[in-house]
Length: 112
Image 1 (cartoon, rainbow, N blue to C red):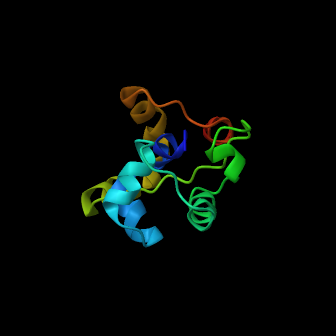
Image 2: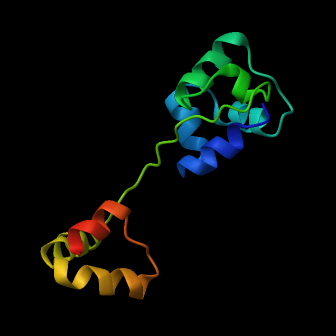
């Protein structure tokens, strides 16, 4: 189980959340990440499905990386900021520069 901690961290979720969503005890999941316990085949399948990857990737037998979906939770204030940003296209490049965020290539073309 070389990669479950790495995958979980890339998704930005807690060990407790993974355990709850997989229906396994939290302490059991911790032991999988610490590699002090190995999951059975049914749990390996659940883990691979959860992390959208192959079992071989989970256990380090291949390096085909899964498509990680990062979970974001934004506050009401953050939502308002995004809406205001979208309403001001003439200011977006300046805001991007101030924040040190490079606009996507297709966004650069739209602004030009």
